[in-house]
Length: 362
Image (tube, rainbow, N blue to C red):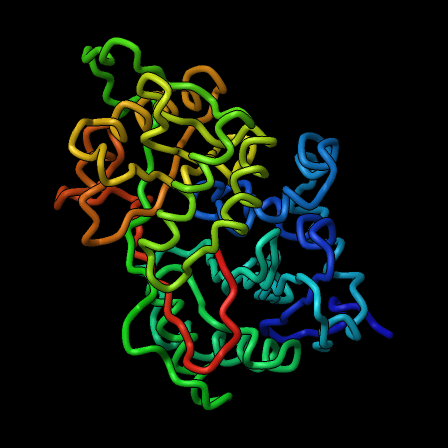
C-alpha cells in the first residue's frame, strides 16, 4: 500500500499507537519543544520505556525522522482498532509542501490503581484554538476514539479548558453519555523556575525535618494519601489502595515528608518527570497541622531540590481555582497565582466527568 506521501492534499490524520515507544518515536520532537505543558502526555509515556530509551534513544529523534516515518507509514495504520490496554492517539496536519505538524495528542492509559482519565494536549497556544480549527479536529478525534474503547471507559477528560469543553460536547453527542453537572477539577497549570523561585530565611521548629519518605513511614504516608484522595470527593481511596500507592511512591523515591518530631504532617509527591521538567502532583497536610506553614516549608524544599540539585529547568503543578494552596505556591514562586498576571505557560485546565461511566482513579 502507498505511504502517506502519496496523498497530495492538505489534511489531518490520526495514528493510533499501542506502545509508548511507538508514540514517542513520532511525537518526541514536538513534546520536547513543549516539555512543560506536555508534562502529563510525555511523562506517562516515558515511564513505560527503558531508562536507556528515555535518556538517550528518544532524545536523538529529529523532525526529519518524523517526516520520514510519516512518509513511509502504511495507510492501514490510520484505521482505528479496539484495545483493552493503554494507547495514544496523535493527530497530524499533513501538507504536500510543508513538514508534518502535531496538532493533538489523546492518551488513554492506566496505572497501578486503575484507569487514568482521557488526557488531551496540543502544542498550540489556547488563544489560537478557534472554533474553525478546533471543532473539525475534535470531531475526527472523537470518532476515532469511539471505535477504540467502549464509552464507559471515558469516565472523564482532562486538559486545557477549550480542548476539554469541545471534546465533552462532541463525546456526549456521539455516545449519549452526559457531562456531570460539576467539573471534577478546575485548575491553573503553573510553573516555577530558578529565576522566579522564592527562598525563605525562616527556620524549621526544633526537631522538625524535611526528608524523603522511607518504608518506615508507610502507614502515615498511606493515611495522608487517603485523606488527600477523599478530599477530592470524586476519587476516594480505600486505605488498602492508599497503602499500595504509598508503597509505590516511597519505593520509587517520589515522595517527601514534613516530619515534626516523628509525626508525618505533610506529604509532597513528584511523580511525572522528564529531562528538564518535574511535576509536583500531590501536596497534603493533615487538618490538625494546617496553618503552621508545613506545606510551604516542604514545597519550597522539594522545589529547590528539583531546580538546583537535580538541574530541572521547570517545576510544574496544577492547583484548583478555589484552592487556598495557591497562596503557598505563590510564596514559593509559582507563576500566575493569587490573581496575579498570568505569563505564557500558565494555563487554565479542567476535568469534566461523564455520567454512568466506570470511574477510575488518578
